[in-house]
Image (cartoon, rainbow, N blue to C red; front, side, top):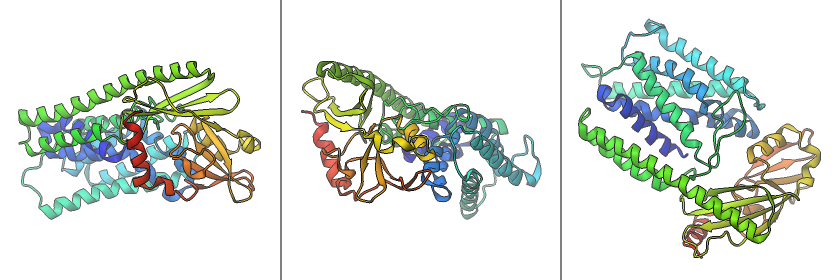
Length: 410
């Protein structure tokens, strides 16, 4: 999900694990560890678009990474506050732990089944950014003055906090349509349960309010613990509600396809952005034709309507389906993709059809949320631009208005 949600979840988990022992530092490092997996976005700065696409929510979002990185991060935090427990004694701890973190990240990333370019550069940037976070926290400590009594926990305590905050990040991402590669580097498949949007205010805002409220209470008190626990329970209950909504909407999609006589090889349903009321559905037919529609929980009738027919046009890139960039696009979209020609000779636009349209014309390049421009004059073919096309239709005032209007039901 969005970074704010992950920070809030990580901070709340950190408070639950170590709040009684280290106070506000548990929230601080829980929030930092909770957003650590998303440092993989820095792949965009040093590698090509398809490598960045394949690397996002990959090894840093995996269970093996959480298990192996947590002791390193936990020991670094323990040493940061003057602790002497655990291996790697003395002042050499930080550079050794930094190198170990880099090696772990690099080896795990190189073992990924998907071909990612410039892995050492990607992992170096991530490692340096994480080191900069420690420097930033240290700078704040220096500005505020060092306390006479240091609140610290043992190496194992900090490691448990790091593991809990890191692993809950990809687990939450599993509920989204984007999904996460939780089993990397052993498998490239993404786990995506499609129950919640990547940004949902009803999940985040109440959780954030309760966390801030808990932060104002005296550390270690029952009131603080109860408020933090309430935030965790409320957010988890909302996640459970999204699962219930998913199975309800899934049955509506299946019934609608049967009523319309549409034979689908596959179909996918997921909530639209910022809510869990308006759902999108895309069905893949055997003839390479896709059918997109929407359903609101406020609709008077239990059916997706209207259906928009989208020609996949896979023949436009048929000669290149095994080229590396196209293979990544096919993998990322789970074969829910359509191709349309562009005004530039030798280029086509590949659109992710899982998220449907933001306009009514499937031949309009600006109608799609996720799209890539592919240069077929090169061999192997390459993605040369993401989110191609002038996106006037994606002006917030336009698409939010359409979203709100359809959400209210028909």
